[in-house]
Image (cartoon, rainbow over all chains, first blue to last red; front, side, top):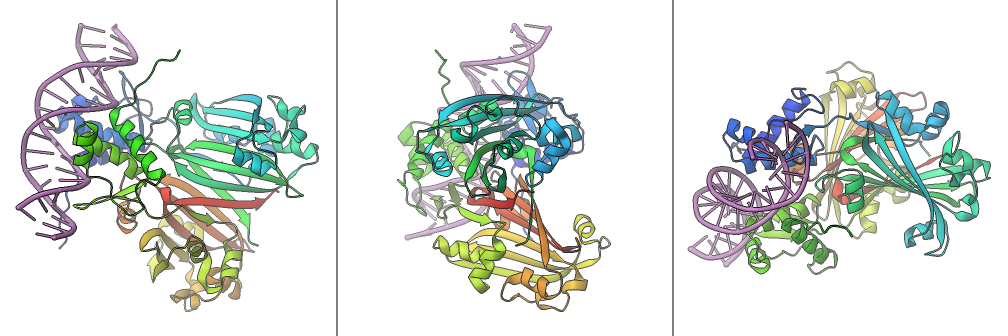
Length: 252
Length: 252
DNA sequence: TAGTGGTCTAGACCACTGC
DNA sequence: CAGTGGTCTAGACCACTAA
């Protein structure tokens, strides 16, 4: 005999709505009933409904468009295969691993890139073995899947390698950044990534259109050439509810 | 000239408290003021304070002990180095990679293990190439750092390899599971992990003492031997706010 | 028994959207 | 202008803890 622990109403309602969404009772991109309607239907206060919707927002299942309504999310889970990106990129030609994955899911992709020479913050500078505040080449990319922003990435490259090369162009050409680094005699030999989950900062919340209750997966990718020199640091932010990461490596 | 967007009060208060905690104004393990006191001090309703505290709970910065108060979290960020676990394990001897990391952080570690033969769910069975519902050897582990639960892991091993061996004992001996698999002629040759971030299920919430607003990092690790056969599937759940993951692999 | 946080209803006002 | 969700105050009751 276990004691029944009645769930709070906002959670019961959240569970009910989640089930309905996952069973496809609301088409992706369509709106839920309004909070007032649900309040009447389920016999609770609107604030209780609001709290339930907050839960679903935090999970990324719905998003709110203010003044219009609460919309069911449209995109499926996106997979990011870290270890095989080079191979995928080569197979995919100029498209890149990200675009190949988007096409697999039947999504239209778009991406902006902004190139600049910026002073490196202390942690980046330490990795690139330059003095803090010294400039490095940055490639800031923002990627969209069917017009939904799904990834921010800022890549840092040492100027003595990258300045004046195709790495400073918007289009890095076939095989992308790593192929160009190889052309320049700095082919990546090892990759390392650290992964954390945290709230979005203001910039990420704005650009990725995220709520503060949602989470980003923050990845720092470090590429080293055969001599052990760091040739690229890439900081990546992904809406956590939208992605699945995959890694693969040989036993030692 | 940008328009000032005043933050809602509960968020201003959450930011204020987060700063205070991160600057060490509340010692780890000590309690914040009560919600009523804060409501008086800051001139807001207690429900507004409660909402701010909800934010900090979701971030894992504090936990609530009902009837007692709101406690500042004690544990530092824990690092999980996926690629070098074998090496760390060997260096650490019988202690294992998890314990070695805990000792690095000055934490006392403890872990329970429960061994059983259980019918494999469909996805696990498919990986192990057995019929769904057929039994496999399971090792369910729960790990603690200074008496705080920080990890759940359920390992699945095929019975034809593992039954009656040291893999079915609580202590797998020096080098752990992978060394025993090697002894049995199934040394892991490659590892693959998929990583997702999601709300805790009921079991995880209970065993890891998590709020539903917090997130788990759910990892599925698959070990294959030299023939490509899956020799272990390990499902791992970590409180997302408590961990940092690290991966490393050679370029192709 | 006093104090803690958890939840609910009620009423109100706001900013934003679309007609 | 009506409808949407966002936020705040107010008052209330509950379960749990500690003394």
